[in-house]
Image 1 (cartoon, helix red, strand yellow):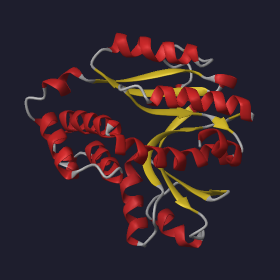
Image 2 (tube, one colour; image 1 turned 90 degrees about the horizontal axis):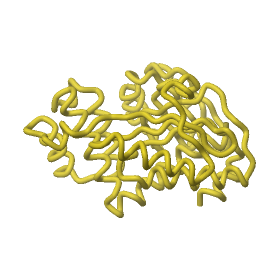
Image 3 (cartoon, one colour; image 1 turned 120 degrees about the vertical axis):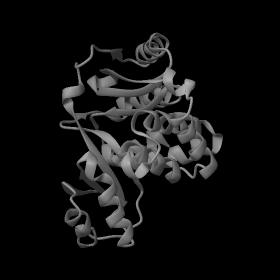
Length: 249
């Protein structure tokens, strides 16, 4: 599990770099807009919007950008009306299961692009339902285990976390999706600094892979995440954290 857990922290750091290029802000704004369109513009009464806004804040997205994205979703919002959430399922190198979350205004275009990227990097697109059963929707909070002890994180369990696991230098805290905000708030109020906090598709089982396969898989995931329509990519691989650090660096 160490490699997969480490991946959450690596993805968070890479997201900050992407944000400096501006590309991530565009994706985050689209998620905020769609969440506001579907559930209203008040984060207090719209958990999906609250999570989208928090993710944008974590990436240091300017407040004005966030407010414009909400307004687009609750106003005329022709752009928001054209967007739809699509989940693509498939396999990557080594038989690793992949779930690819996208927001698109053209399902055919995005599907074709995702299929092409998978094939180019040794994977293939599957039918709906082909790998989804291998994952559970969960809240995932990652904390640096070098700075805190398990006792420090008891507050997470008290706030409703399902599990707190340690692996190498990472604590992985799992929650029900609806409890993510409450657990995050409890940790922050206790003075715990978080590496990342997000909704994710958490694998029920993992596929062991070697370094060569891990390199191919990371190149595929990077290519998918570089697509303008793709938001998150979830995978059920298991690899040593040191190996992952080398291939993802």
